[in-house]
Amino acid sequence: MANNNNSNVYGIVVTVLLVLAAGLGFFFWNKSKKYLAEKEKIEMERQALEAEKMRVEVSLDSLSNAYSVLRTENESLQGRLNSSAEFVQQKEAAIRQIRNVNARDIKDLRNQVEDLKKMKIELETIITSLQAENEALKNENLRLTEENTQLKGSNTELTGQVEDLAKKLEEQIRKTQSATFKATSFSVQLERKGSRLTTRAKKLREMSVSFDLADVPTTFQGAQKLYLAITDDQGNPIASSNPTKTTVYAPAGAIEIIAQQVKDVFLQQTQRLSFNYKFDEKLRAGNYVVGIYCDKGLLGASSFRLGK
Image (cartoon, rainbow, N blue to C red; front, side):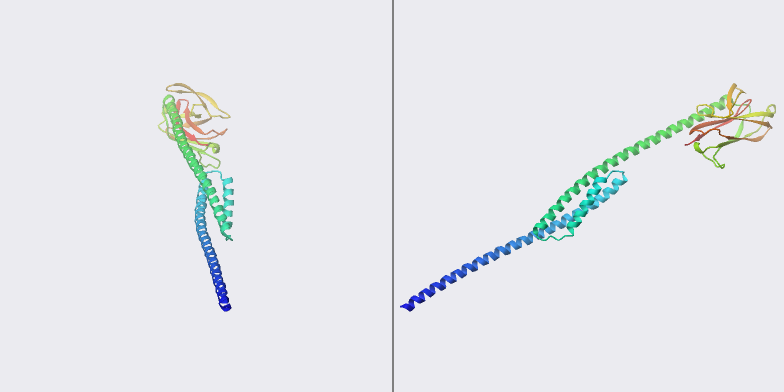
């Protein structure tokens, strides 16, 4: 009877122990399963964050290249990049630092991705602003170019009008003051220091005027005075330290002139004559008329233009 009781107790104990063992086994198996699931979840999140980090880094590289192109364009358009250039340099340094540091855990990786996203937004904002500034500068440069073209056209037209005025004055002088014989092969040369030719007012030092007198009537041959007269395109004589005021008796009537130089000559039927005149004062840029007179009127005239 006692043996049966011991057997029953032993069976109960073994059963309880088996139940406890099964329960503990299930508990640890379940815990291990949750741990593995959590670990797998974290690993998947890590992989996703690393992939996202890589995508953001690629976008940041593209933004950096776009900024470099816009910055070069802005500088060529004479824009101002002082503050934005420094800010972008700071952000690029921060991006390089993040890229060179491996995240210790998932939290650090999340922070890195968030920081990169934030800097991406900041760079996009700067680039958008720079694009707008460059577009405005392009429009302004285009407007200035068009205005400059219009001004050049106006200046060309004005220059043409002024030169035309000088030509008209020259022709008017020819019509009203022509002598009974005329100078041919009329030539005007403008010289600077060293006998080199120039058309610039500030470098002009002297002038050489040469011409032919052919078929001079017998009544006008012999001793004569020739006059060199230089005027601006308004008919005003240029300044001279020793001007000569005289009256010539042209076919159109008596004409008063102011000559800068007088030359005594002996006229024959045909000859080549010249004047060499050194300017007492520098001329301003503009158009001028030079005329050669004798006592019987104008022999020849020509106009010339001086630039600045």
